[in-house]
Length: 298
Image (cartoon, rainbow, N blue to C red; front, side, top):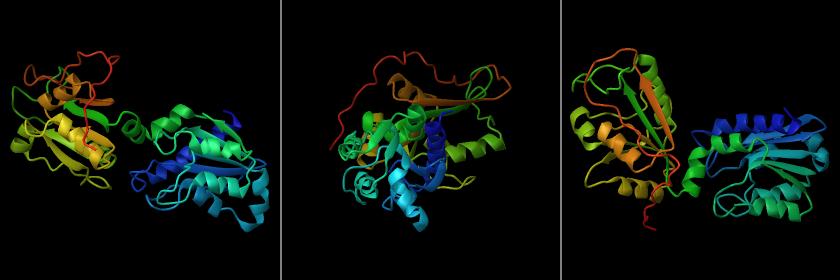
């Protein structure tokens, strides 16, 4: 591991602390280093409050302020260059006079997209981009998908028997364990929205909350003829819901698969067979095909 990678990993570690409260902003961590010593660090705690860079500079002790001219600041995501709820972080970095800036990945948000890096370089500060780039992108996969593909990040989740059925000849059975149920609630807390099908909603009345974990319950959607996938995707975009968890039955899950609308799949498989029932969804599309596009209301 290089020195740049070591400090960028610390940025990622810090950034994860903002998982719940930074939304819909991305999780970002920042570390300020001089002569092999961390003199400041921070992360984006809450949307509308100071960004990671602001908190990192604020943590620098007065005795270390003169060292900033020889320091390097590491940031997991490109510093912003526009006025939003807070001033541009690129301007703050320039005003602090640091010697070097190391960026994990470029921000896909339309008002940034390389402008922060460009501004810092034009101020005469050395900038290195792409350190642990894939890890930095993966941390904010929901944010990146939302802004680059113009749809929420979509995860399909279901539990099945060892022989690939969702139930026992049409009768509901316990497939998940208490531990895996807890993990599902943890997963829900990490997603902005959740969707089930109309039949599941009518028959089972699922709560779809996070009662076995800490966090905010996702916004609830029900897929039906009156509320098709296109409407759900459009509503997510209109309300800045950057991630969607699909927990519906076989038809609902298959609808997303057939549309090519998924980024990740999690399958829980029980160690027993039932010999018949509702088949688990089938993957028959090539993931190399382009995802279908919809026209979303502005």
